[in-house]
Length: 278
Image (cartoon, rainbow, N blue to C red; front, side):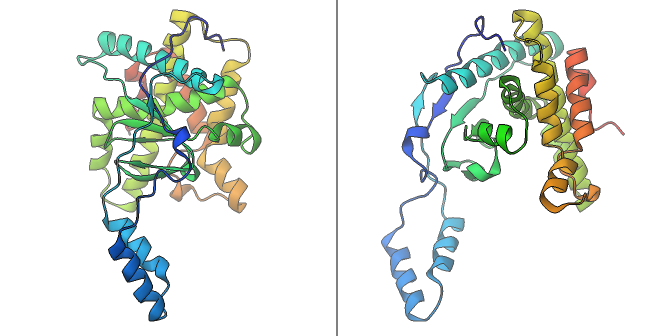
C-alpha cells in the first residue's frame, strides 16, 4: 500500500500500555467475603466472581488519545484517516446525512466496552453502544500466520470491514437487521446480511481511497480477497471441525465475502451493497 499521501487520524484511544487486565474491575470486599464463604461450604469461588462480573457495570477506561508513534500504530492511524476522508465524501455525495467518525480503540488482552468486556480472542469488533471499533493488533499476526492472509492491504480490509459496521449503524442497517431477528434462522440471515454488507462497504472505501490517493499497489487487491476468503464461515468451520454447516453461518461463505467486497470496489456505490434484498 502507498500511504504517503494519507493523513493519520487522531480518533484513536490507545490502551495498549494499560496491560492485559484493563477489562477487569477491582473486586469489592463484599465479593471477597462471599468467595471465602463459598470456599467454606465447598463451592467453587469462581462462581461468585463470575456472577459479580456479570451483574456489575463495566468500568470506563481511556488510554492515550491521538495517533500512536510506533510503526503499527501509525499504520492503523493512516488507514483510519483514509476511512474518515472517504466516508465524509461518500456521505456528502450519496446520502442526505453527515458522517460521524468512530473512535478506534487499541488494546491488549481485554478491555471494557459498552457491549461488555472485549477480549482478544473475539477478534476485531464494532460496538454500536459506544460507536467504537476495538482491535488487539496481535490479530494481524493471526491473520498472517494462522489464516494465511498476509499483507498490509489484508490488514486494511479488516479495519475497513469494522468501519463498515459503523457506516451501517449510521445508515440504519443495524436497526433493519434487528427487525429480522424473529427466529434463529432469521437471526442468522440478519447477521450474514450485516457482515456481507460491511464487506461491500469495505470495497466501496477501497474504491474511493484508491481513486483519490492511489493507495493500491500490485498484489494489494489479492491480499484483501485472500483475507475475505480466509474469514468465510465455511473456511473457518472446515479448518476447526472438518465439515461445514451452512445453516449456522453468521458471516457468510468465503465466496460470498469475496463477491461482496468486489461488488463494492467495482461500483463505489452504497446502493450496490443491499445484501438484504431477497
